[in-house]
Image (cartoon, rainbow, N blue to C red; front, top):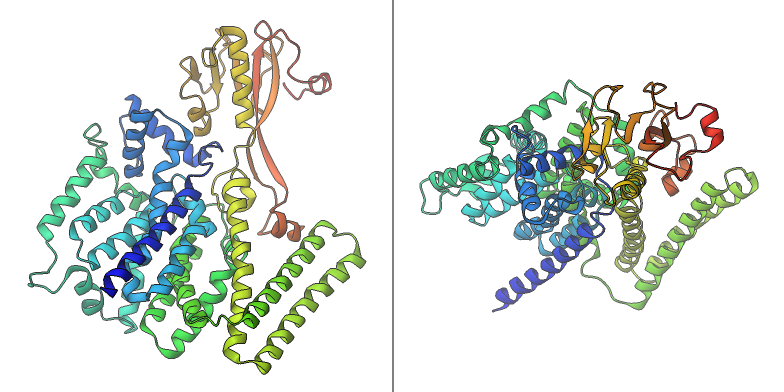
Length: 581
């Protein structure tokens, strides 16, 4: 009876965390426009729905499910991101499946970390991220361990359909298991094969024939986009090819930027994950050693991989949160509820807040040397006061109570800091490339461009989407934005005859041949971080507010003078200096 009650309470707790994770991932999901990489996959799904595309890309699972969503409810930015957002929420069930191995309290801490961590949150709200690969790989292992062979096979099939994350996941898991076996942390047969597939020849062994039929059926059904594009049967293997190409095609993301992102956004799991790793290695704890090895392999794989992206860090964040759960459950439970412990925790939190406010003052008043001196003095003094307070408390009470008060104060401060980073990155600065989590440039003034075009269309045709437009820019974000405009054309070069009422050109294109017939306005299509190296020159302002120089990539909107009779779209001073020509 007690076991049943405990099982039911566990399902309720993890279900509540899952609900919270789902809400934060769906909140404002369709507010910000799709970035370039996201738009590429969303537009492919839209083309498949419209029957305009014959080839299927390697994000086969996403294309198939999103095409179905578009067919049922129509295309939208929200639906384009819905599949990774929903599946990213299922990450909190992974600790539930492994709670018998890691412990109930560590599993709950892991689930909460997965729900609010900036890396997991941003990856879940982005198309093309490795989040679905990580979720399905983890769920496959957990379901197989529990003997859920049918659902484990389904999850494994969707892992194969997870795009580029498939290659990275296979690399991390295979290297980790091989090194763990070589270092005798685990025995591959007893600790991996038997828990996953059962003892060979026994009644509980893995039903290979049934599993192959299930995997084949899922690949056939979803790989072909419900039997409409049979090229998708083999298209999923392109994810491995895309990963391998990353070893010879470097990205613009440096290894230093990846490390800085983790240090700035994840101080809580780094601090307690390192503590758990040190203690686990000293005590030769198998689980801690395995998670530590997994983290090392994953972080090394990200840093050494030339085609790295910042969100590849989620492969290292999973074991890091596992170590954090072990450390916090070991040090904080059973918790002493004495009022003095809470008072110490509150004092530590106040001191952390004072240090952060002092740092914010440093970032906002960099030129006042006297103020800078006093703010650094406050930060150092706060640290000294905190250490003295813990020392006096432990001398007067006990080390156990002093340690728990310190841990609770530090955890509270760092959790609030991490959640503020999640809110800033996922909602406030979701279109800002200076947050480092997004691999694509920001879309800047794309919404403003679309609003202007809609006004021009209403002015001429009475409808928002009926004006004829020619676009001399083949970026995916523009293709996605104009997907529902029936009279839009994408061209590679400007034709002198039959110019449309609206033209969109790059800022470098020579437009003198028609500039007398048109009014022009520039819009910023993309924005990029505008500094060399890892951090901008004013690093304190970036750490505090994610501010720094931006490089803008403008485009020009040209409107025929007989379409817009209300005046110039640009000022006379701009027109005189040739900005629109």
